[in-house]
Image (tube, rainbow, N blue to C red; front, side):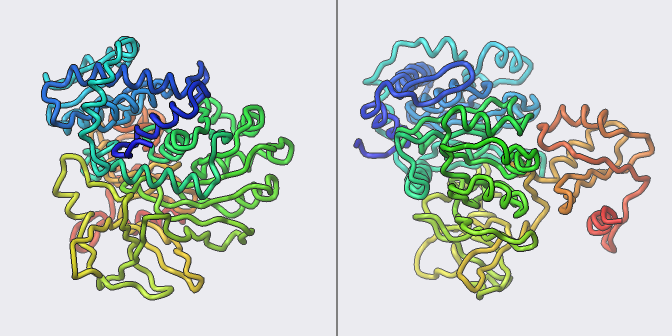
Length: 512
């Protein structure tokens, strides 16, 4: 195999070994490994030729409907020696503008005719090159040019930039290196016995880092990835039938989807004989629903995975090989290969067994930091305080946990005002900033209702506000997954002694 300076080299090896075997399927068609590589080369050729100074990184924003065209564009970006930036097709335009602004006037955008029309109202600097996917996919590939360009990449260069919620209202671009993704794909292969006969049922949006589990284990092993139609997740009782009918062997889904399937009752009637692996990540998986899956589909490996976006998706795992009582916490387990997790107490010392502390991550999967934002990078990615001997960078997750008597890591929740809902990481401050843009709102405070797993937005206003209409306005500023499930209108917020909004009192009011 060619030296893996870039994760796209996995596709080169897969195309050579598996050729015309189907690599990816969506609801409109399929693509082989050979064709995936061919189209990736075509897109890369167009991008390279449109790049003014080829020695500088020019991120490739992929603004397309979820389909085969997305991973094709990711391959094209990597072949052009640039990181890709997945953009949700329904993302509010003002949020896209903020991402474009962070590119410092140098980037590419791959989109379609509808996307191009959407972008026409934005401020695009001259250095932002917009490409229509259908057009550049027909570019005659210049393999010599692509290979020359790709050869300068190192495995510590960025493979992708994924933008997460920012507390200031500005999205943060997590920048992940190729090495982290390559190591992660190998860990997935070894842990779940993925091979060329495996079929992965993709649920995660491509702007969500869980999707790299599917994409890169497919490229590494020759497995097939099926992009499950997004509309199907509105009907969870239909998902087991899709798994059965398509011979899916492995799924990596957010717990919300698994909960909905379990609650539908369909698992007792629909058999999924090919399913071998059920992995989940992104939020806490309730034991009640996990046990329903285990009893209904017993011959599977069930894995609770954990990892923030600032890691190449996952840094710990726990194989749930037994039932847990509803009230028992489910471990997040042990560190993945080439990763290490340490827990620091308030004194920045190694926490003892059963002592609570902050989860901190070390290893190849740790990201390079936040794109074009050194200030917040330096706060989260710091020197390991346990290592006085040499520079060792760790990521402070902001998550609380401890190691139990069995040596397993247990997750306790967030240290700050950040939450995960349906697998999406959300800064509640960004919701508050968006709410303050709406007429009649004098104050905003978003809290997370842990019991009911929903976002509640408190607003100070003298006007009569209704959730549905309010969310219609909010939708102009934030994605749908960030919209509150409940709206509470107040004349005046309670305040603490130092005149800050009393979030504790507001959250307690949800229990009344």
